[in-house]
Image (cartoon, rainbow, N blue to C red; front, top):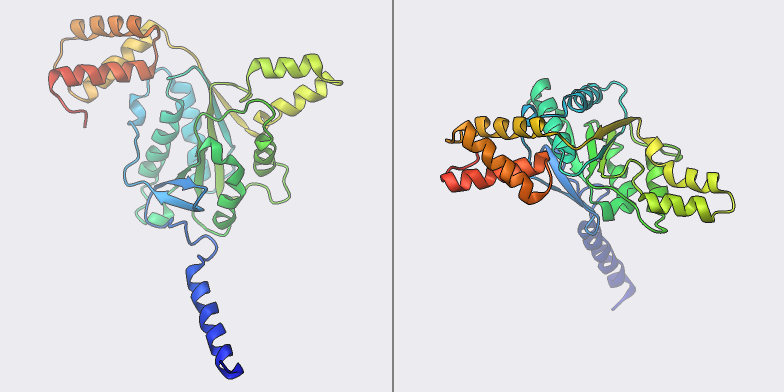
Length: 290
């Protein structure tokens, strides 16, 4: 092949490669849905057709946490100052449910019709936290506002991922984009097991500094919301709330008696246990939960 023929061929190859390589952020089709799941491997955010959420008023026994997170999210959606939030505490008490319910309620309250004007929710899995800077890069240049949400965030052993998260939330040279806020749930207030913190305290040359390094991540969350095990009355309130909302055809006496037996077999009372019981009741009654 002559030199004259090589140049056009190289140009065609370069054009083809350019078409195949996605532009920065092109994998984030963020204009046509309210919620997305971030896939770090493919560098894309997949739209969620229907978010698995419950109505905000169905979350019982967490009134203070609900009102605080809702107000914080409304302020953020309006472009006002707001804090990253850490929802920590007892299992099954509605931490992740509250994040999803608040997101939906805020969009309903603001009544924005255009997709690019609605508050977006992007879920990032705990194992993909290291890719968070890659997710934030294209979001930084957008006008739409997003809640980035990580469920069950915790760190074990000698993981260093928490350091990169610290830099993203606060302290890094770029910092968190103004149009992004970070919400996380965890069973642990400092997102690390107590024995890990105690081990640092007992073996480090400077125990105070070692522990400070481990627990300082939670300080990056300006809003801490604690969730505690519910008592029996709250558990009954949750069960009755679900039954009324879905119109279950069952007498209150039978509903509560079954709820007690169900909680005993599970060895716990929580919003999750109540929901599992309601699904069992609805199934036995031949009713759908929709």
